[in-house]
Length: 175
Image 1: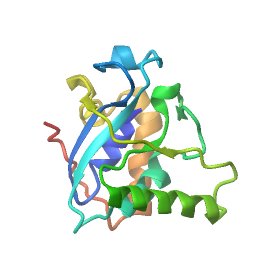
Image 2: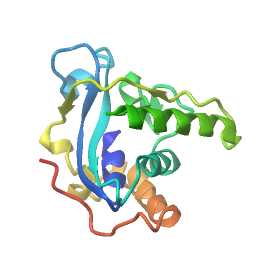
Image 3: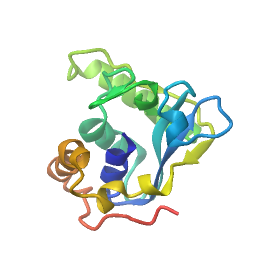
Image 4: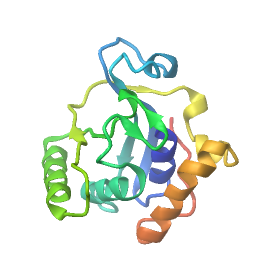
């Protein structure tokens, strides 16, 4: 679910903007209702703008796959199942693509994962921002059951594992 991805990235020093939305797919538009069917080909995603002098792309990937996404699960993250929940890296430049390939290769050869890495690199396509009620969902709904069970632990893991990248004050401007 993009709620947790957005929540974690909103606490990372150097992330200047984060927008929940939908990526990929073949339909001309994407909404939660359409994407949630699993047949449009879209995936829930978070588009970010970051300052590479503060946080590098490889560091963002490390954070993502250490505290947010399981790279060994195909079409699933936590309790959410379906192709719209696939973990994917979507580079927006050839440099990012090169870093992503190297990072996946490093993950595969590290021996840290007991199951095969199935996360792939997808070509950058049109991104559709999600509906307003999905933006900053964790910040606006901190007592929501899903947030408490699945997303609060991710933010706590960011703070524990990457204190040098953690910022207490979250980024809330998504427009």
